[in-house]
Length: 393
Image (cartoon, rainbow, N blue to C red; front, side):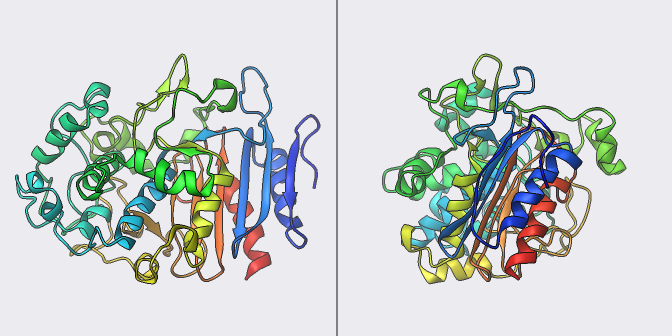
């Protein structure tokens, strides 16, 4: 299958993985792809590395091998890797109370919240009662005080509510408390994961990255928005709804002059990078984790089933049931069955997805410049994933 005339599809696939190149090309001819990339590592080897289309809809500039793009909540998976690394180093116990590491957290009914509950979106801390603009987010001490004063929306551990933006701030402050160097999550990720693995991915995009390496995001048309579930659409129109409050700050990563904000950390939704980088990182977590010296106990914890809140997996923000979260990642589950049992990853608004499948030894990522509207799997990404698993199962 060829891409439409004028659309470039570049990169390589290993022998036996040609179906993924075909699916990638079909995304341009059949599924309204604009520009994007897909990468797969299998048992430590890069077997798929594809990119194509345009990175800027207005100028028509092509998507290059090193083009990076904002992946919104797919960032959550990379952020969760930092805490997994801290767990492997013995700094963090997932079953311990957050307040053990962060004493100021123990107020407003948060005294008994465990790290596991927080990372599973079960702490009731999906929104802020106080204003947290960019100036607050950029000042980690001020932000920590706001986080510590926040009161849970309900008894922690009883309900699930997608902590769309807030989760990353809590993760970063927790990491600052346990890291002997007291680094923020973005700094820690760069020092301990991105640099050792040679990843083009940033949770704190530096000034040194030129605009020419960044893809701009094309918003979906109004008709495409009809694909959203009606209850969620109606909730999005209500400024007091849980989902609107949870998404406050989701646009902070954007910058009108620089495409994306520089030197600002939004660990739950501000990551910028390549599909290659995301797939490589997950590929390490899908194997023995040797490149990052991950302990087997950590990898076993990540593949274990999610623990539900007492009222089940119904999500009070997403207004639906069935999505499972554990230790900062989304899990393979009936509602979103990516990979095999034990797989873990994170999707991003617009269609991006990265995940590790330890059973198959797969690290996978898809990114795009054309935002889609599907809530549980973009058709372009699903076509690629279906092609992959027709090969590796």
